[in-house]
Every structure is written in C-alpha cells, then in structure tokens.
Image (tube, rainbow, N blue to C red; front, side, top):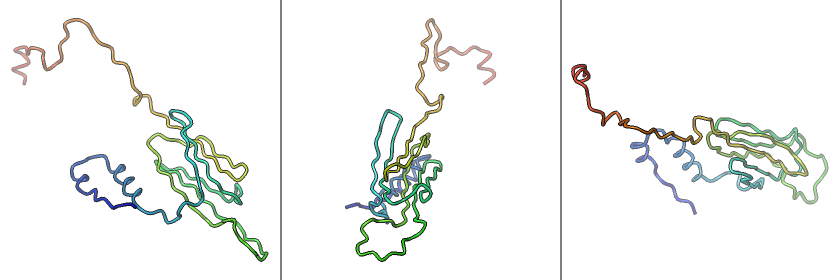
Length: 158
C-alpha cells in the first residue's frame, strides 16, 4: 500500500531538486495502465541498461518509441482488428503507453523487435567535465589564498 507524502516543506528549503521531488510524487501515483505490457529492466554494465517488453501481436509499425529529455515513452496501437468472431480472445492487443523516467545523460542506443519482444538498449554517457578527475598536489610553500599574508597595497585597495 502506498502512502501520499507532502513534499512542500522540502520545496521551501531546497533549490534545484524539483525533478527529484517530481519523480517521487509520480512514483506514488497509481499507474492506470497497470502492469501491461509486462517488461524487464536489466543493468547490463556499469552504464548500460536494457528494457525488454512483451508486445506479442504488435508489428514494428504499430509501436512507437519517443525519447525526450529524462523520459522514454513506448506506446503501441493496433492498426486494424480482425473481422472474425472470437470464441475466446486471450491475447491482449489493447493500446498501451508505458513511460520510463530516465536519469540525466541517459541516451537510447538501439531498439529492436524480435519474437514478440521489444528491446530498448540505453547508455549513460557522462560529459567529460562530470567525470572524476585527478587533482595534482603541489609541493612547496604555496599557501591557500585565505592563509596568505596580505601586503599593505592589498589592504589599501580593499
């Protein structure tokens, strides 16, 4: 059972976390689509992910994958219905729309449909400026700016 949390106190004291709070609120809402179509999410490497969805009965032309910033949307819409009379209709061919929230810098690498399974490969690519870097340690008597003695000319200028 899910409970509703009020994040408004956090909005008052936090700056730049809007997306995180929005994701938490969205996770608390019930998904009207339920659990259909079934899917798996697998972390294949440190920065590689794979989503596999069971979309039996859908062709490539009836599926749509849309990638927006921080959002992947997979939807399916059957083109036409058989005109025959069903005695039992157990294969769910109803329209669907499944949304996946993506972290920053996650990109869609490939998507393919085989044997009724839609597979979407994703990769997180951190920009160079966000990757860890080694800081060289200087030797000698260089002091941090706050510890350096001020010269008389700097005092007068300040």
